[in-house]
Image (cartoon, rainbow, N blue to C red):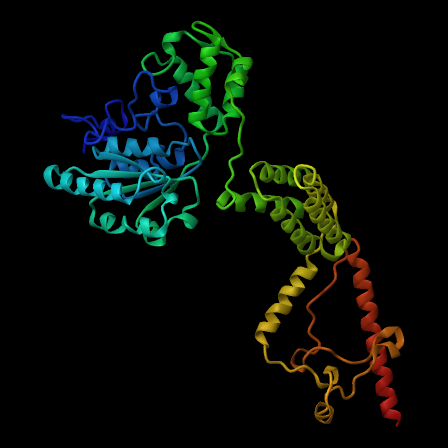
Length: 469
């Protein structure tokens, strides 16, 4: 390997006899002159690569691995348009490896076997390494992913998998343990604005030959509306340039005309599902009604099942509002019933109403915590016997054995509180629930304190009566 200038500069990876991908094409960094702008402007070196400084910036881990020619198998995880495919191609170019792109959506295991056999023959004949780039690797099932393992271990291929889904969920453990995971993020508006300026100025691959300019407001709107997706930004820029015409100026109007509807980035079964559910729940817990409405809307716009959301809202009412406002559970259940009755879109308003109510309600997780403690105690004492005095005695034998003996009928005592315990003997006196002071729970706490006083008084009176006999 040569030094960093040849690895990262304009001539990175060029060798006599063709660059990476020569066996199966020209690689991901070249495109025909009539290809979309996003394809033509695909970065060819790390110096052209936008964003991801923590991964490929000066001194960053992946940049150092490339510089040292020690690139292992990789999993690149990030949203659409953040540069996963481009980065894989740059790695191949910088390390002079053959680049074999493969889509888990359109191709199958038979093609994988073919590519691996080609890689084995290439290594034997020329000593040249092969990077097998698997786009959307999460689309492969466990058995299909396992098929890569022996070839990765043998060094036949260097596997680079790209995924928009959390690898923890979607990539099998054995493969994950043999690959480095690098997280790529959506590009910032500043990164996208810089990409668009470069495309407007580049006469070879970009729009420099059209002499098109762009107003700052239009550029800002384009960068913001592209949602961190370089492909979306460049394709919209190309359309806007066509609307403006040669020598024209791209204004906000042309940008709006070029932008298609923005669809939310959401997967009902992937990590983003859990991220948004977490955001909704925590916004409600944090009493932020505006944020709660926003995350609810994001999930509904993304196609989430409203009845799933209704169930989550009921859970929030019992977990985070609890007895601070017992009416919250009634509102949540009413919202569920209203949606079930009305359907979408009318019923979604009931869910929004419930979310705002829960966000504004006083909060208490005392019952949630108390039930957790009770569950732990139940697991720790699974065989603790029910006290005899509170057992039922439906048969004569059970009466003879003392079932129900000594039971005190609570209604016969002051305040309806008898001087007896109801926990197993080993747990007598154990407290699980301590009422808070927020909202209605303060009244619940007062009632429980009053009950404790009545029980103590009844016990003292009973002991006095027993002592006088």
